[in-house]
Picture 1 (cartoon, rainbow, N blue to C red):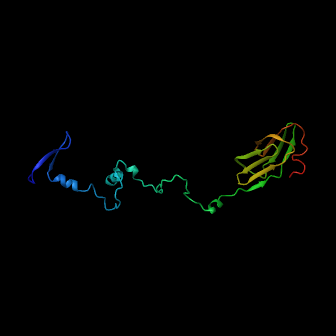
Picture 2: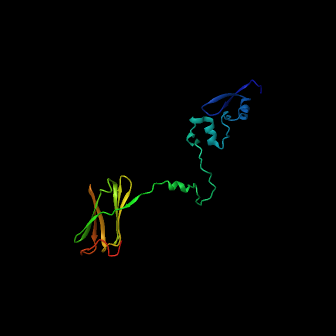
Picture 3: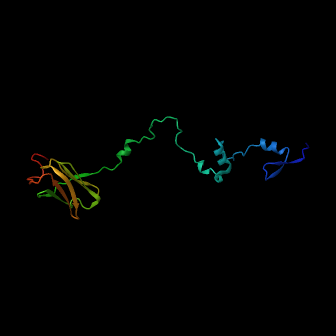
Length: 194
């Protein structure tokens, strides 16, 4: 064949392309596209090669993000990823608790009511009143907007209770202890209890 001779090469039934005999050899020898000067990284796979060639317009551009996580070593055992210093937990604010010492109580037939004034507490936080109880104890916690938690702990009650509930009023909290048996309490706590 003569070097200037042209041939018609059919690539698909619908399209034809005029190529010289020497052009296909030159096209095969040339690399796909060399990375730009700023890109020093060689493509690891076809996906990365596509992203390098087409940049932000690549179909797989969303996959261009590199994961900073350590490579998986094939081990399924859990491992420590991060260790925090003990000083980080020490920075957490400590909750200040104060004992409620002033209250009044009233013995009724089926229940005992305690009246706790909020003069000392001040404004109560939203959802700041909580009561915990067992059959012989009751603990009332009042969280003020200012921060401290005011606690009334009633250990060793005079007799057993079935339930402890509270009602919050603007100036006081009423703690109601439902008695297990209906008889008069002469004291709120058993004799000798703190």
